[in-house]
Image (cartoon, rainbow, N blue to C red; front, side, top):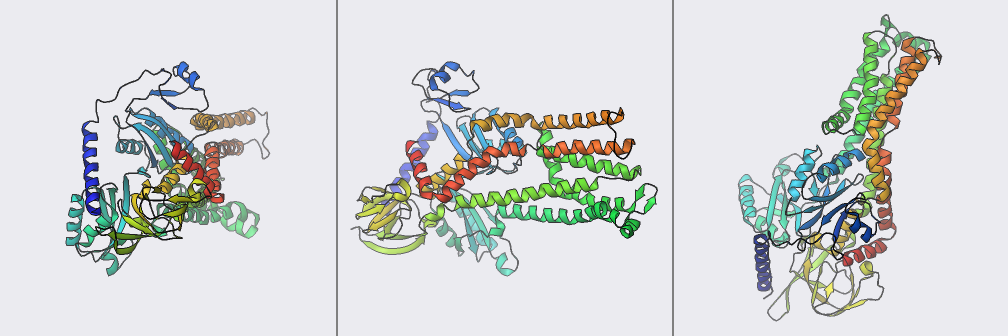
Length: 594
């Protein structure tokens, strides 16, 4: 009976989805924008009074949109790779704002997440992802969707014929949206007989156990894939940054030795200071050899980032790094060619090395911050007791399964003293449940048939049978995690002001650098200021160039753009770490209000 009821529910859901698609167009009715009862969707600084907004007609810096009675407005949280500075995030926001259908977008530079509000009638989520890629950033991946989910299975005893049959069957399975199969890292016969299958599916139409049954029918052993730490994108990026930093440091040490140490020791200076031809010492040739890989291999990412930024008619921190290090490197090359004797290879090498050190420390810090937020889902139960009932409602079979394998409609037995494994409804039994974890109410709540229960709360006494209604990213706990992540993308009013400054910051710094160079050159050329080592053009030109490079490097816009997002992320993270229950209570309240 239970299986028949579940099948009927799925059929009803299919019919509803078909009707929604057929009646999607032509049913929305516009409402007058400035009616007192009209809801307004406002994108911009917060804190203005509603009456002032309604009478402003969009003249106070807000983007005001008409909300329709059946407006098809959706909100999505994306992960965007390749964001290195605040200018990058602003460039995506500006490009998206020009696209019809995108109502509002905000990016968090530290978490690399984007919160985007859009009209589904005018643009789809796939179109938004495509637009982000066009701007020159990595693919945007969806983070949360109550109806969609993705899972990775580990397949063993795999052959090519089995894979072809499994792939065909999965594509024919109702609810499977997409799938891809790859070979995991490793060598040997065992690795060749293993595959990892990533499947995206609709949780309302199909469950994980259904997918596992389809795969196992072809004689393939299937299990949930536990991704090793070494395969995560964050770990790989951190490892690569650390490798590049140490390589750059090792190549920089000989350059620093030749420039700063050897001249002070007569024996060393006699060897490395020996001039091959007049004005061309051996040390300059060696510095050039060590500096080339730092400049063009280690620093390649800066050149790529600067090229992409300039291609999109914007300037970011990569442009500043490329300008400063390239000026020092090019001058040094000309110094070798013209045999002027001095060089700035050490400045170029050290700048790139220090910037990579900053990136390593930033990446490690963000990893620790994100780890605290990831600890929230671990508060739920790890397993659940799946049961089957006969026609009389008696338990005929029990099986302990992972909470990840729980599907909508499953009947679960909850013993006294254990955590409720999923959000659902009580179908049998009575018990007192401790919901203080979510609601903050210390008094246990009595549950009886028909009452709703929340996953991760504790059954204090009594035996309960519940029917799972929400699983995966649709559970209360998952929605709370999504809400915290969404909060981290929000922008304080001061950050909106900082964003405007950051937009013009890099061009302004470049202008200040040119002005600094010009003023010092004029002062030295006219004799207003005397250079300590003499009046040779070569001497004070190097000094002027170094001052210009200093302005470019020190005046980095990252601090301006990162200050407020850092405060927001650290604040939410500390809240989660030091008071998980308080954070959950507040988020639960927001979910109830929304």
